[in-house]
Amino acid sequence: QGAGVRHHHLGGTARGDSVLWRDVRRLAEDPDQPYDERLQSFAKAGFTLAAGIPFDINGYRGIVIYFGNPHGNQEKLRHPANSRFMNSAAQMIGCAAAIQGPTEEIKAFRDHVRYQNWHRMKIK
Image (cartoon, rainbow, N blue to C red):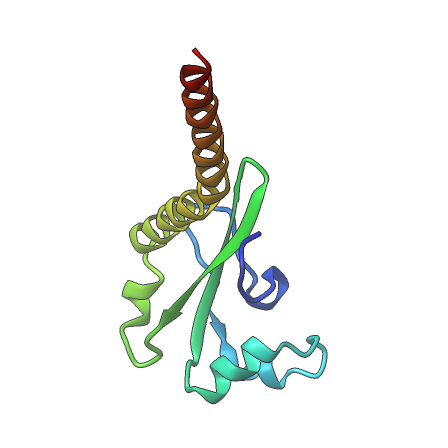
């Protein structure tokens, strides 16, 4: 399944016109949050602003984490057009991750069919 920081840490949203940005250091230091090694690593590495957007593609669930520049223009970062783009991009990233399993399955199936066809030709 999708990898990443758990959904409750970053407060992802399914709405297309808003994204909830969180302060990574505050989350990492929050005693009410469960300890998460990745979150601690992000905070130690200097990532300070993050947003998590969940995806669910035919039951393949995960979260895409975006990092923002805390010194950048917050109005632009939170603009509805930017939020809609980020939400749509998260779904596309989720699709790319979700297709990996079915791609491996179809490859194995085609290899098996090819083997069966070759085996039948050898018998004749």
